[in-house]
Image (cartoon, rainbow, N blue to C red; front, side):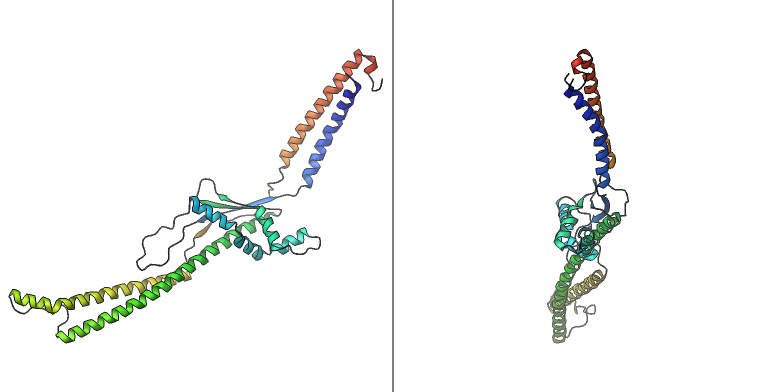
Length: 314
């Protein structure tokens, strides 16, 4: 074997520890990244207020509806609000800019979005909000704030729907009040014109079918008018009850988003994976060292057979 093989072997043996030392030094200089996870349950929207509301279920969202809400959580309106609430533009500017000037909101949005992961939590209907930053307390604070901002947005939307429903109910209640008033006036006029007794005291006089027919012809229109008025009053009462219930829900709306598991600071970094990097470097260094020894040993063995090849340049 030529002397160059011996030199290559020596070079590989020298390179092996350098690779290991360099990888350790590089790993030490890498920024530590931390993750925090908040888990929320997202329920379906309640319908607008109805006069006779049907039985509805506030079931968790699934499938496309759940994916839609996940995209909303990552949208600019949500993340811009988080950036403003936590003053991230100023905080990150102090860390990233030499003059400590605040960074633009769009830049802060790009940083936040780059470290944000929103996904279904395992095989459940929960949504996982994971934030990765260089500060483990900041990661937990941001993850929880995203959940709160999204929940407040859903509550505001629910209030708007309730307000639209209340406006429709108030309009319908006013119409029904007018109908009841007209029905009462018609009933009163008919009773005065026919001189009838109150309901329950009207008994047909006479025993024959002709007397019964006359009684029906006289009193049935009154009965119908009274029935219409009572039904109108019952509907009006239901409208007022629904309005009262809507007023309570405006003050205390049902929460469509539930914080199942708030994020907590986790001081254990998720990146870089120092153990994995050092182990891979150690394997590479070991291979280089072994290969270098093989080359040196083979070169030395060949040199013993050929004296001119024992020493480099011999």
